[in-house]
Length: 236
Image (cartoon, rainbow, N blue to C red):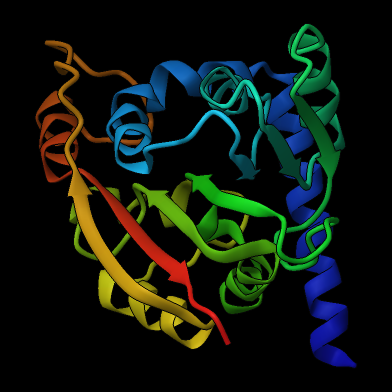
């Protein structure tokens, strides 16, 4: 029972934190921050017009909108633990007929099994209280042959992101590429692969944010790139 109680506590902390992010407008800013590393992933996904796609940790819905444009005959479902993020996603994407947004946790996705052709999660997986449980849930809702895509900037091999753990007000898993691959495999995925997606965005001459010490560190971080892990749901 203790593990269940801890999981609920962590989930509630996540919900509250990302509600604060949403109220501060940070959900809308994610598109500018992450689009340069997401576009190459969308190319690799090779979406078909009729595909159903799950966006895990959808935030304010910017990625779901891009996905919906590529699957006009399919459906995109954005899931986020933050009810405020979901409210904003629904409001800003009210014109999309093939996208919907629901409140839910990665470890307990509010959807039926064997529905989606693709599932993608961008900059969210290291916040999951139980990454293995979340990957098992993603595997459950994918169709046979469906593919999961996980893109993160916070991982062991990119040392320039390690200081984030001290800055974040909520726990985050700092795992290696090999550890993420092992989790995918344990969750039941096959053909598990990982790659790096560099960010070509030029660094400013002077950096005054809190995530990096200076512009040189930001530049090195972007050159190291984001970690992309993917896997296929095989038939049982």
